[in-house]
Amino acid sequence: MNIERLPPIVTSLQPSNHPYLNGAWTPLHEEVNAEGLEVIEGAIPTDIDGVYLRNTENQIHQPLGRYHPFDGDGMICQIDFHGGRADYRNRFVRTRGFAAEQEAGGSLWGGLADPVSLARRPGFGAHGALKDSSSTDVVVHAGRGLSTFYQCGEGYRFDPLTLETQGVEGWVPIDGISAHAKVDEATGELMFFNYSKHAPFMHYGLVDPDNRLVTYQPIPLPGPRLPHDMAFTEHYAVLNDLPMFWDAALLKRDIHAVRLHEGLASRFAILPRRGGDVRWFEGAPTYVLHWLNAYETGDEVVLDGYFQEEPMPPPRADAPPGFGAMMAYLDEASFRPKLHRWRFNLGDGSTREERLDDRTMEFGVINPRHAGRAYRYAWSTVSKPGWFLFTGWIKNDLITGESWTWDLSPGRYGSEAPFAPRRGGTGEDDGYLVSFVTDENTGRSECILLDAARIQDGPVCRIALPHKLCSGTHAFWAERAQVTERRAVALG
Ligand SMILES: [Fe+2]
Image (cartoon, rainbow, N blue to C red):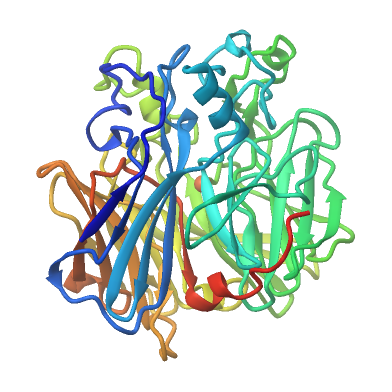
């Protein structure tokens, strides 16, 4: 393995006892290029060709206040599979905030858990006093990477092969773009939403395969909301207005305190993908971080996602002093997301709901060729109780009800594992799940490939990475053609 280390970035982070700045969540600051990765077990298949891109928070500077793991600086880690070989590289996203703090040598913004008065510069997005670290999500659209921030940031484009940041995406509106923009591989279109503290409080947009914004319309809401994800079908976009959001009275005093609003239903907006009239549907109160997929069948739009049984969990009593509330909100065993189906009847406006699996799971993936269309298989992650750490996967057959599981051994933690179709494959589960794994037993990291058809057999391949990665979340698989075509599109 050849490793090229880049010049070090400026850091000011000091050791602390913060549970999400230690162990598997220890931030990584080193940036490298590594060619010819060493295989630990198995062999790299020759029928996988593309790049796995994972975004994750890696805090660079000493926090001004109380660090929350969603505050860290965005870093893209990439593994590139080609011809039975694999290369790796990682880069911080060169955001305006990254550049300003590199120049200052320290933090200029407080975090999600801090008073807005801590910010030393104007902030970004819905919250308004946070750094846009572009650290939440990543997709590839129009041949280029796009990293996004959950509080609605500017959206940064980067080369998905070299990871060079190419600047702020030109079509992103003044209210920004939320994490979880959706790419429809069948059409090459990208759909997105944003939210804010001023009317109309939410917008929806569509960008065409040539990276032109062709739809941008208001989705009027009764007040500021905190949607995290959206879904789409072949003809519709699906947005949400869920009853967990900032307390309006406290918000007038610039205090951002989330609460569950008793008596409010969950609301779902369905509108034509290229814009038009919005139809609203109601459902049982909950909060949903992530949707799995949506599709049309007969008069119905079917939406699958992870229904939280307890969106506002009590603080975890076993957390270190002062961290109980934060750790509960990051702990799936506390908020208990369950795979759930909503059926919205476009004929009579009714909603039907059903539970698809009673086990706690989240962060699901599907074969992207079935996104927005009828599908059969879902692969969700399982977390370590008490922690935002992925310990295994559950595969659900949504037609037969069968399921299969595979767990990492103790002390080993995965990341979101998107489905990489096998070259030449035709079956819906004919491909691989790709994940980075951080091993607290050895202090090293690796990449694993699971056979998506038989996850219960364990990895078909384990590949050593050149340094220990911070545990991470959202990731994207891009096939070779997705990162080599349409690369001449100019930034707006
Ligand atoms: Fe997310």
